[in-house]
Length: 264
Length: 264
Image (tube, rainbow over all chains, first blue to last red):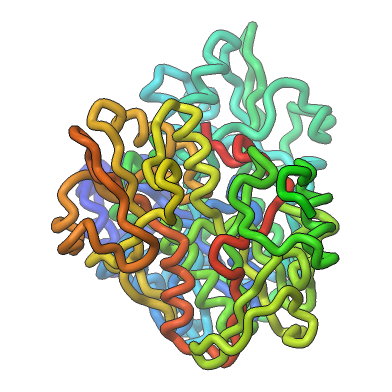
């Protein structure tokens, strides 16, 4: 499959992925459609994880929950199958990755609950449309992410620090960046912090905990958004007997348009 | 206790309620503070009810969940006790009201999960501040509420029609009413419908299913907001072995300010 010849339709893209004909990070695919982080947990952890998301909507913006015994995200992607429609999954047992697979058939159990969470692709699209450059895209690197000293609000077994992504924004565009992302609380929303990295426990802005460093230009301000790595890190720290996620960059492509999620 | 001599502090008000010295509907108390609907259910229904709220944020805007074994809404009212700090509770067994009490001690069990949900007081305050008259307040009646043909999104055992409240708004203020309430998604948010009642299954606007009818003036448009009666009606239809709610009008007074809930 030529990446340049990909269909725009989320349904057709998921069809290719389901057939194993498209195993590739999904950034840039189905422009304008919401892509989602995936976390799958056994039912006995589901209430606490759902509550954790409710209490921490910025790092864990919940889009949809597919209940135990079901496999179709019927609100965000009617007809899709959560077991086959992500191109690459990671399977963890007791907090350790045991497998990377294109299909969950051999791991699926009827007590698994799937959580789809908003990802930053949607708000980055909105920022770019507002004329704000994304430095990490220009350098073709992963966005830099940092573990902060901001505590999430615990729920049951789940707790831990918030992870943020950082984007350098020209000083004169910072207010606009806040406004634009405030419209999208379902995909992390407004920044959690502007400016001084040390204020949120980041000692060295050039050494991210995940992703890659990005260059600053004269007059750039570091702007920090809550990051979808947070719920995965928090869930993993509990070392669940079984947990399944998408592989980094291999998101679940939904039918919803970014604008469907805008609050105003 | 003279109602005119009441303290403004939520903490002091809850203290009076806890001691049984204030048993009265809470409308107008602690101006500017968020008041909440209360629904208490056994743990084995809690995941489905939490998911129902997540799927239906307009009728069921979840403010806080107090987990099984806990009694303090520590995010919205640190130091409060959910078993004593509402002035009048209703206790239902198998869907039937069995008791109205000022204190839950004799009914409390360690498997009960408490849900605090946004109520319309906050957005009515915002509407009034914007210069929009509330006809039902002027006539000192309860807001009229209607069962609609709008289906909620089911979750597990929970499903049913959305209940809405209706306020007549002068035609030239309808847009402003939409804007003002859009800022407060945590207390039902923007209207779900404007104009023609029949379009949402309301046959006679003068005969509400709950509350009291309200007079229209020349040029008024009926504006409909999702109503907190919805989650109670939906939960009750499952006939849970035990369910506890606030008595109508006797809300839980939180420490949060209305503006704390504004999205923009």
